[in-house]
Length: 338
Image (cartoon, rainbow, N blue to C red):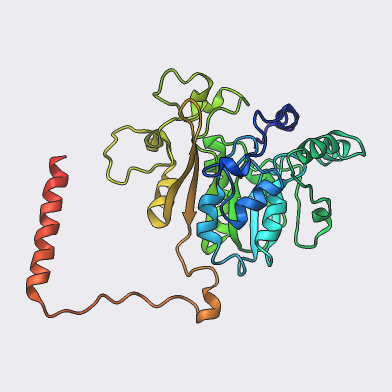
């Protein structure tokens, strides 16, 4: 989903263009069918985070592993970018996190959304088209007290983001906006202070194939690959993405050097990993960067607060300690020889 003003029209065009194969049949499983509660919800509402609609990112394969055990204690989630006006991911979050308040933010204007929402308008046409594939539109979610939609907001603009009414802390923040690296980095620093300790910050679509918004993607995060045509709007190797911080400086002058110093420091102080859930034609990958802010786990408050530190097992075996030290020295010697 893109922050540029032309994105809604392109998204509508993509939706109306249809799918070459539609929803997979039972005979097609696996690998392209829902395997958990979240992926079923994504498919129910025609989200491209699911298994068959548009980009088929299969992100629920990763997200359900992270959130499945805490979904009933998550109290807030902010998502940048709602996609089609039917907001399929918002509808999914509302059910998946039954106690959470949902804070969708989008650059679309109130006027353009209202114009498309008139009876028989563009939104109804999208709904009718998606219904052919068994998808639903939850119209009532916009009046649900747990959904707090903010339009007219460019999430890459700190001043605009700062005007959004949000709770002091959020459990989950998800950036599904422009997919431009510079926007993603800027938004990360604006919203990171809002993330609670132990919360999750997700940046989606950092290695997918080209979404033809404009050529600036290639300038922000260039790829060394060839013969990938339009796919080269995005880097095609994880090692080429700026967000892959090279802690040991193995890739001298690599893309990670484009990171602001504040970003490098953030990545060094908190847990993070890349989640790869699919491959596109031309080499693009369905990748999310998932960061967890240091602090007690979500839901641990009811268990007495912060978890007790791990205590290493005691041993009187001096030989075992000597063996471990020798192994460490050998590993360091091998590392230096690389």
